[in-house]
Image: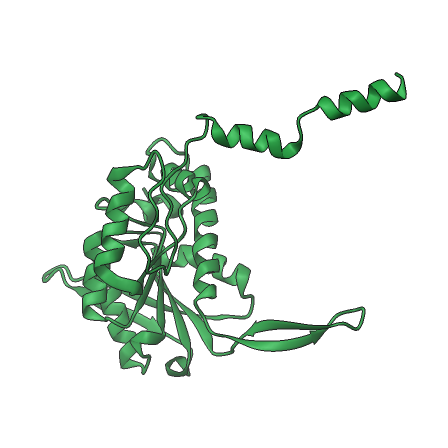
Length: 267
């Protein structure tokens, strides 16, 4: 190939930006409605929204205020939610996708904890201005389904201490009753990541928070990590404890209450 012909062919090829513009202007991948956690502004509605699910979540977040935080919705999270809800999903795929979604929630939960500025020295001697976790955090799982989230927290914080609460419904009164509770001895001085994947009525979480308060924990130091929540469940918790923070991926009238049985293989 002659040099002149070679460069002429290069100049006639579409550049990378042109390809991206052509794809984005097409209809193959329509834009979806997006939302951002901890945002006071009304999310922009782009094309092709999903009114049945997305509008419900926005309405719930607006009604319950900033204490309810939703993970930014994207196709990855939406697919994980779909696989977890699908009754034909195998247990192996269910656990795999649940662990992925748990990890995303845990990472965002850690982002809600306090940081402090610090300076480190790089291997080349450069001073880098960064941040580090402030000490005094712990996790508390509500048994049994909350234990599914423990490994995700340990994967992010290897040395974090984790307490446990066992709450079950009384056979006679059907009220939530505490059967077991064990926390770090200085839990009253810590920020608590309370783990419970499914918020249906909110009764179990309300009882767990009461136990933490009895041990000296302030509600404003509790961050509830959840995968799915109903509007009623989130509302009940925030009405009882207005200072608590709830972090979840979805607010929907129908919660996947089969989560614990599917995850631990007891269904």
